[in-house]
Image (cartoon, rainbow, N blue to C red; front, top):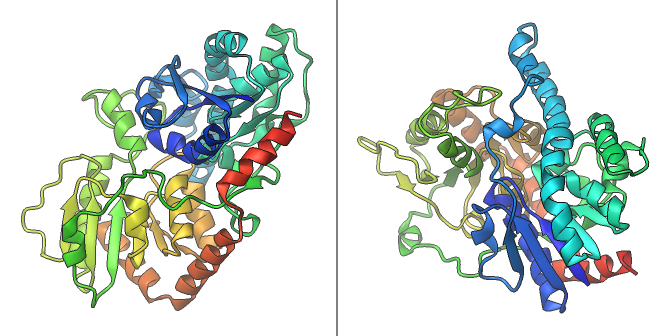
Length: 406
């Protein structure tokens, strides 16, 4: 079986795909990853072929006249703005971005002749490419797959179908006609619109070489251990913009990650009855005057550390959500952009933690204390881990995917 996988966005998208791709390669299937130059390194140590043929996504990818509606609608509250942004993003992904990707991916498919496509949640061009070649396609775990409303993609995709001489399709769920892949059981699903999935057990550690540094073992264990991390997607996106500032060329305003990290560090200083590790994702943080219970580090193997912490202060990216479910780690979620707002809300709905709405250092610290003290949250986190452990190992995906191509 020849499997074409597309990967866009941040490294977390590729890391979510790796367990399935490794299982397919180990079973003798030919796997080709079509990705961006920045993300190619995610796959470099695995038995898959990598083709850096897609452009790195930048804020300008989603900018345009439609996004201007966000700045014009001053009558909207924050929840309404987020809903409008999700609709406009869906239209951009199914329109401008899909057209650009089609031009790049169809020649790849004509040469590779895949039997199956595993696609990034942001890649709707592969829906049409699969229709053109008469093969199945499935979205892989991502925040976009969770939050994108298929109803907002129908018109744009049908326009592209017309350009490809394909019949129009009015069913919004055609974008997942053969299902989807997930690592979360139905009772704890973060998906809002798509149908049921082929669900497999979240891999504990995707990076096979991960190890915690020795200093972590020297931390005190007579007090709660808190880990705080902002993820890499937003800092990387803003880095590509140069020094223009966090909102200089973005189609929508987002929090400045450097300022958010500073506020998180100030909140950590207030948690003087805890030990707090803050991962900076390579951003500069002034640690002058920080109390000794706060430890700054550029990065740590997050899935490993989560096995030992009492609270995860997170941005709420879907990889981080799944890793906290797998390790029964309660969360305090401080969303930054995109699907993270819905993930934060869903986390609170499921009883797994808190959505932080007061973004001051005092508000963040208070939310952390609330979660640490809530025995019901800790019990629900353990319940989620048990549910995660009922899922089959990811290697069983091979047989399921083979059946789709019979």
